[in-house]
Image (tube, rainbow over all chains, first blue to last red; front, top):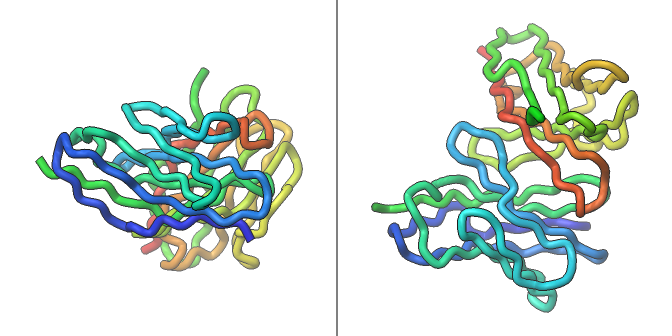
Length: 111
Length: 115
């Protein structure tokens, strides 16, 4: 079975501090992985995606993620967060012609 | 090019009534997905449709829920005889095709409240 796991349901971080949101996946086939962000009371927006090639993927708003096949991980990172980064972040796996979402990590920025 | 349009944004229904949620995909997109987000939970896949066809409905409850994507017009998610547990945000996404190299674009969602 294919799945994604986000271990941290909530992550509080001080403004301008670095952050890492963890994601692990489980799959026996080729993987396509995404991070989506949901700002309060809004829809979802694609942050970045990994399809193949370079394992370090850069996305919008200064976010990046690294695909690690040996550890089956796709952690999301940002070196310095801003108050506007407060949102819910979803790690997403594409397989069987549909997106499968992790349970989400709520990132709260502390001024 | 307008994004994925969902309406209404907010819908209030009494128990036992019907709820109809509409989704107009982006221009040129023939693939539509519906997801449900319950409070404090992630998004759960419900159904995947192409024009006039249901491809995968493995996430749809067996009763009261149905979806369609006609040749003309928006995709409709229909919930009959709503119950309090149906209260959630329902998101629609569209894409031009399948495969991980095609990005799915999401609408703003419809927030259904059953009173």
